[in-house]
Amino acid sequence: MRILSWNINSVRKRLEHVARIAEAHAPDVICLQETKVNDADFPLADIARLGFAHIATYGFGGYNGVAILSRHPMRDVVRHTRRLKNDGRHISAVVAPANGEAVSVHSLYVPAGGEAPDPRINDKFADKLKFIDDTADYFAGEFGFRDRVVLTGDLNIAPLPSDVWDHHKMQKRIGHTDYDIAALDRLRRSLNWTDAVREIIPPDDPVFTWWSYRQSEFKVDSKGWRLDHIWVSPGLKDHIASAEVLVDVRNWTPPSDHAPVLVGLSS
DNA sequence: ATGTCAGAAATCTTCTGA
Image 1 (cartoon, rainbow, N blue to C red):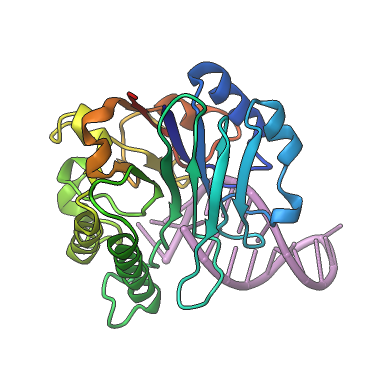
Image 2: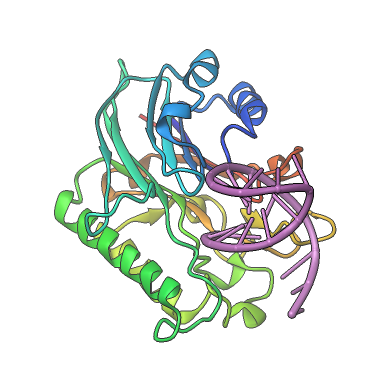
């Protein structure tokens, strides 16, 4: 099963890109973040036409919004809330291929966390860390190590020195602070998750999935961050067959500021 | 401090979030 995750920054602005990705890479499942559309306005017919007959959406007006597009039937769709608050940041579904074992797939959009790198004075950063800890509690309580679970999404954290273009400069930037990295490690331990991309690409090699719009010119492998991730539960660790970042997509116009991550799992 | 996007609400621009 091929699973792709992409912060699309408005699904309605980038339908053509989804078509190109579907054509070129044939993912079975696409997890989207920042769809920026209410469920009632989600372009279901356009997506279905691309081969994804099964669609689960969790919109939140003009902000946030996550979705799962699947070629295979889905059941048990859950739009997750945090502290009884709808926020369009976590949707899950069990993808059940006709020939193959079912997988619980999660599309997550972790809050960015604002500017000041101190949760004691920055409420957005405190909310981000709380969101991650709530999510860790959820996974620890809901699943066991033998379950087949895939966590995807824009986690807004680059955990390794090689996940940012300048480790030293970024240590005081939200997304690469010690607070971020410790929180992401708590999430990783919640189900003993494996970072699928780093199983395939050596941890010392720079890998980026996000490049700011606020650069005069986007250049591959310059000034990026690896904010988008696909993790698998222990039950799927031995099934990781391939992993890559579709860096070229960042050059397609009009671009999202994120590139998709694609992981292939053997049955 | 700056750069650029996207969407909403209300105008033809400003705000918010990232």
